[in-house]
Amino acid sequence: MLTIGTHMSIAEGIAKTAQNVVKMEANTMQIFSRNPRGSGYKTYSDTEVEKFQKIRRENQFGPLLAHAPYTMNLASGKAETYEFACTVMREDLARMDALGIENLVFHPGSHTGIGVDAGIKNIIAGLDQAITGRENITVLLETMSGKGTEIGASFEELKAIRGGVKHPEKIAICLDTCHVFAAGYDIVHDLEGVLGEFDRILGLSLLRAVHFNDSMMPFGSRKDRHAPVGKGEIGMDALLRVMRHPVLENLPFYLETPFDEEGHKAEIQMIREKLRADV
Ligand code: FE
Ligand code: FE
Ligand code: ZN
Image (cartoon, rainbow, N blue to C red; front, side, top):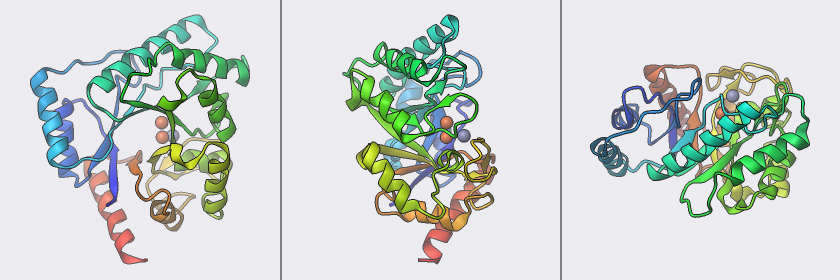
């Protein structure tokens, strides 16, 4: 069965958000682990959390995904930025684990001039101060487009991060279709080749989630602009091949496309119809 959802705002609380997922005829969701552009977070009452758990259980949600804020840069060489990132990673890992969220995804970070190796060192130390090894939650490194000084646009860099931490068993990968395409992995003409390379470098068993986006920017542009599914440079056919691929079809797919909830509901419906139609 297809596991599909979208990025959801949790402004109305986590129970109401889960209810909105059901209304959208989706069966999973991605939420921010805290305010994506600031630093604050809300704590939920026990009743609210119970209600949330009941909704996801009764509607058989697939794995849920929390996304760390964009302001968190674990690769930073600036003390203040780095301290903040470490605190957020530590707190949100514990908070999302306590909520029973299966995966926490984050952008590895931008080295902003200190170099890839120093950036990766910082990321590893940041993960090590947060992960105890006793969590149920898995931390996912997101494949990035490579804009600016972003780390994680190559499978090798993701491998270097995972290979350096104390608890690699708690680290896996979230593949963003828009980002890998922009980074120069040709999922349009050579999906097999890209998955083969992923398998050689990281191992396909580490793939736990897919950010399912089209790209406004061309192949290899190293620019990160999401387009609605089928409306970008990747296109409908290539995205459907991703969704149907035997090694990917059982993963949860999360749309991060520029729509509100009504628009996302229609987009999910369209995807389901296309999947059913042309086999
Ligand atoms: Fe992301
Ligand atoms: Fe993404
Ligand atoms: Zn993106």
